[in-house]
Image (cartoon, rainbow, N blue to C red; front, side, top):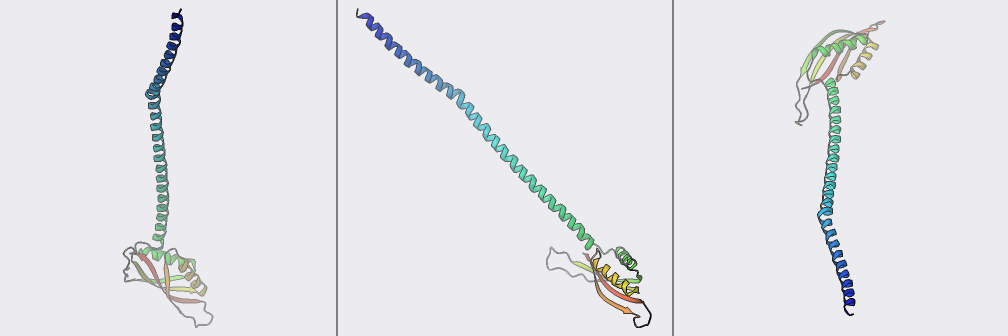
Length: 195
């Protein structure tokens, strides 16, 4: 009679040991599953996230670089337009035919007659700054024929001409005669160009 209680006790203790061993086996199995499947997958996910962040950073830096390049291109285009405008104001060569055409056109628009024009090339002054190009001067001596209103209009045209010109001197002849509206004018004009 004493054996059935021992079997019962062994059965209970065996069950407990089996439950403890099963729990321990389940714990070891879950640890193995965690370490062999979940941790590598988690590390892969972290690696992919890092790569994604790195690529996003590269993309953002490339966009910033493109914007900077676009900004520089815009500045250089505007500099090109400025250079183009400067080359009209101060051409790189003397171009006497263009000067004669401009002087003749202004005389015609001012209802003046350009009788003669002569040119004198003044010496070029070198700049102390190596980045500043020297500017040359061509002095034009002109004889014009027309009214006083015409010469005023001609001088205004010289001031507002697209090419930079300075009136150096003006001489009026024939002003002391009565009932005369037409005069002879002698003008000296300095015209600038880039060396």
